[in-house]
Length: 219
Image 1 (tube, helix red, strand yellow):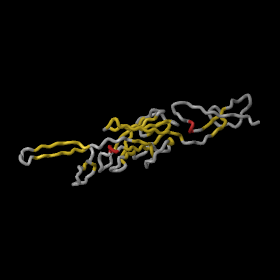
Image 2 (cartoon, rainbow, N blue to C red):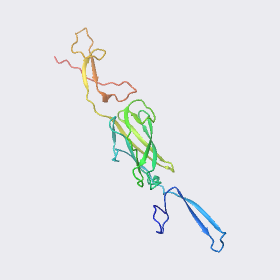
Image 3 (cartoon, rainbow, N blue to C red):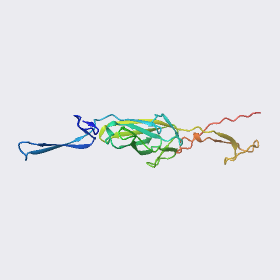
């Protein structure tokens, strides 16, 4: 057997997960007719998953909030209908926030066995909100793609990618306790405060974080 539609070629051509029937009639006994039925299935194949861009180029990291997340999965035996695009599903899990996202991948053609989400997922540094269409993550977190073939539970695939904040420019200034800029302080009278603004150091929205700056007397 093979997947296809050619006829009279010595092979039985059909689509996976379809039924075939056989009929026998005894030429000497018109009343003796029997039938049999079976299901055609594709031979099991191992799945492979990768984090990619929208055209399937493999990536090792995404910039949070600016680069869309795509997963490309190859699993030939999930090409169940050679005349149309099939779909498969997998789950994304963020290692820092625990956020989860169910993702449907669509076959890239009618007969490719390669699947990818048609709309990229965005990401943000935030607390988790499962299945909202956005990956809530943290700087340098690990995002995993987890797939299991519904027709073969032993066929699993997993892939990991690093989530990073895009570099941002910092600003540093002397201030009052409310963060308002100040350029002058009175010795032995005023408390000196320093404010640093640097968005890419906000790596975890669930905790209050710190940075280190050095003060020097230039006199």
